[in-house]
Amino acid sequence: MDGNVRQSSIVVAERLGKSFVSGDGTSTPVFEDLSFGASGGMTAITGPSGCGKSTLLYCLSDLRREMFGC
Image 1 (cartoon, rainbow, N blue to C red):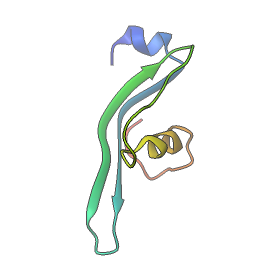
Image 2: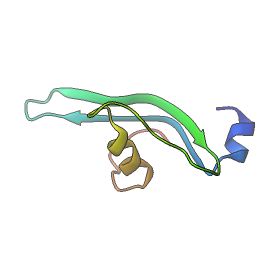
Image 3: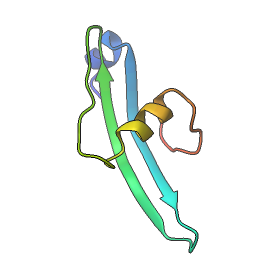
Image 4: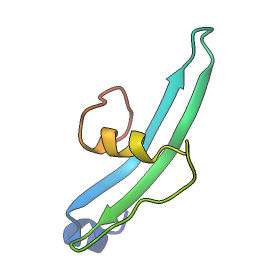
């Protein structure tokens, strides 16, 4: 991620990834290699139902620790 974005952002996510594993061991990725920065003001995370918006917010809030990335 660009150094200027990192310095001016309140929230920075770099190369985040999250997958869910079903009962039969099949892994389903929710998002992979996700990077972004959010600065002051209003930021919206939009998308269709089931695309991972809430999962991303849980990961960013540290309520879900089983993700990868920083």
